Image 1 (cartoon, rainbow, N blue to C red):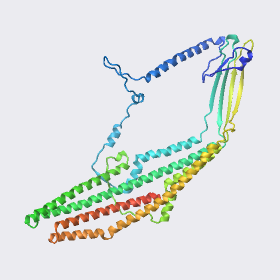
Image 2 (image 1 turned 90 degrees about the horizontal axis):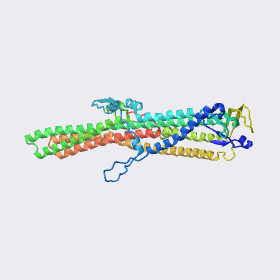
Image 3 (image 1 turned 60 degrees about the horizontal axis):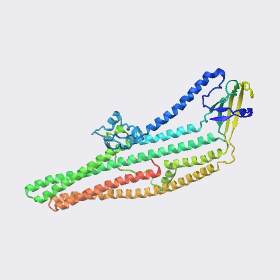
Image 4 (image 1 turned 120 degrees about the vertical axis):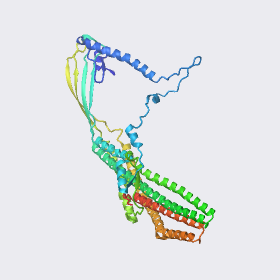
Length: 508
């Protein structure tokens, strides 16, 4: 960048130029500095020659590749993508990670719910990734209290018109400046960062709570599926015993071949349903690894426990109070609301202009110009600058911050209302699920088992037909399966009740 010098204009000659070369600049071209002038001219020449070369190289980097066409045909341009050709294929997993992900084991390991949830919190990769949000928020807190970097400026200028004794003086200047934020901007910005950090921590807690409750649901599903499998196993065993007895009776001539075939069909049907129940139970147990890290991918867990679950409390007032006070997502929204309110003070502080203070040193070389001679001298410089808040007083920033704070408060109010609705809905569903389980446990299971035993005795005595016995067996199987379904619905209702109320713990 070149600018004319007023000293030359006053001298009546051609104006000298001030050249700013960043950190390196040329020296005045005096007779004793011809070697430096030659080096400067050489560097300029190299720069001017290098610019066209770099331009040609950049143009050749994006030139489309022309495919070699057969003889007698015009060449065809091949579709070309610079990004696609320059981007290497993504690297696959390492040998160690591939070995960890492909391990397989048939051994079943029993595990309790508390131990399983501890492994989930320690090894879940999604939760580990979420924890980095807290680390990022911590770095924002540290960055909010940092001072702005000082600015070092060097300026050099020399005459490009005159040479030798007529050369006008050259100038060299060093300036160091520092901007000081006024109005407590750093402290207010630090408070906003602290509120955002608290919101991030609460969001992480909400993620962990939902992760634990989802893992508890998967654990309960695995137990229920294994109980359904056990019921089908009991039914299949009873029918196998019946088939053996039928074969002996058919040999003795007590029953016909049709009854024996009907029994055999029923046995095969229940064995097919048993295989399906076993597959569902195995899938449910294997699904427990979805909440764990890769080090457990080959483990086949066998959940230990019953589905007898009771909520921490069923009082509506306590549940609502717990939800409003303890739900991590609502806590995070309160911190975000406070951060939005604190941002108003930050915007108000921006109305106070920052002050920049600088000190410098300037050197002017000597000149023997006939019109404007000048001796060698050094000067010190002090610079103070600040913007004048005339046109922009940050009214728009303050208005936007106020709107964001009001919006955050309304979003929090809406979330609290929805949390109350969720608690009431979860409590209602829990009451229905609890009544269903009590209905089965109060006598339905006992009655259906008693009816089946009497039907078996009656069939053996010849007082009942085979179809009546098989129908009684199907009914008993359906009732027990429905009971296990009611149990898992009850467990899920308890888990959702705890989720809506912000309660982490579930025992079964």
